[in-house]
Image (tube, rainbow, N blue to C red; front, side, top):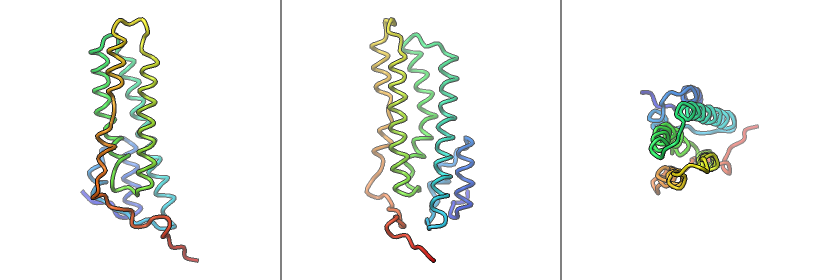
Length: 170
């Protein structure tokens, strides 16, 4: 496993991640120093990979949900559990310490909103005439990714090139 250090390494890594490949371990061992010439392209590639992976998850969730007509609490728990496992990859990417801090913050905020929108959509589409609706709502409310959001510790490596210290060469 080669640690990504150049823009080309990271671009390849983001492309592979966007296609569904598990590259998080490789990503966590890499680093990249942003400069004025690559910062915008790096951010664009990372965002494209994140959005593509999010779309893959949504498509997979939609397929799972359509295949199983959820009528019981057990069926709902099963579908949510399976989808939570695959959503964990997206959460780890969004909270990855190898990404620049402002990009990680943007992804983390987007991911939190994404999960909240997902839960709201599930609640809104829970059949009102289902006798287990209350239990289903409790299960949906328990669906969260707090363990990833609070995983950022004091040992976090700060971004060595914050935007305030960028060098512009004319």
